[in-house]
Image 1 (cartoon, rainbow, N blue to C red):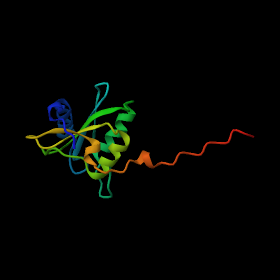
Image 2: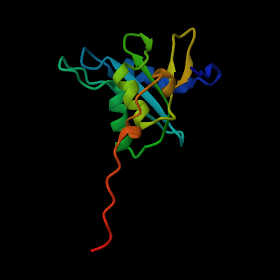
Image 3: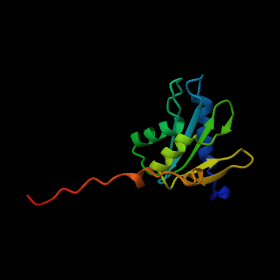
Length: 143
């Protein structure tokens, strides 16, 4: 797994931590995520926990980014409320992030050892959804 500990985006961690501290209230919203777009903009979101499942903060962030016209994310981090610090994405989020943003870097680790890891490094031997889609047949141009 390739890591880039010297390039950890601390401003992004602070943005997620701020949202976790100020917007995560109660059991419905316990995680915050922040992502930096390639153009430098930061997008934030919180999870929407529900006993039936509900989307993680990382997945809510993908929709929020699209709603804000951000489609090219560079780096993402998730932070837990109640000062839990950086939390790595769950398996479902790892797969979705890989499919949406195969070049994305994810900040993982503890406060003592934060590092950036390519999302592909979080899912070794991973299934790449786009690689397994059947191309639609081309229409025959002859009448």
